[in-house]
Length: 84
Image 1: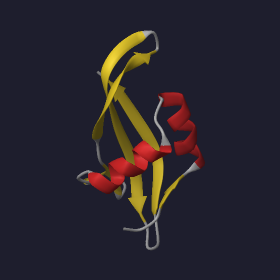
Image 2: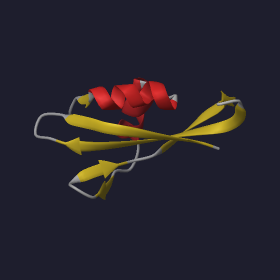
Image 3: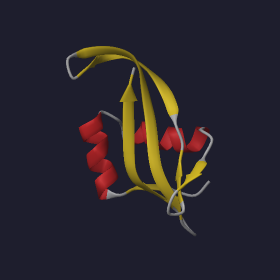
Image 4: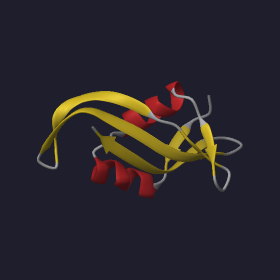
């Protein structure tokens, strides 16, 4: 697999949305990729969470990176995180 690099925006979104770079990389490496608009890809992975986020308890955290596959690397553009 190509190296995975997070853009500065994606790194900021990790902090803002409660996701780690390691979770993003694991999601890309182990999940099914699906094409979306503008030649981008997405994938999703659920992680056991069992903590509070924004003063509410959640059992599961889902990480959904949006990325592009370039010739030499995979570049993560942004990250969405869902709690349930």
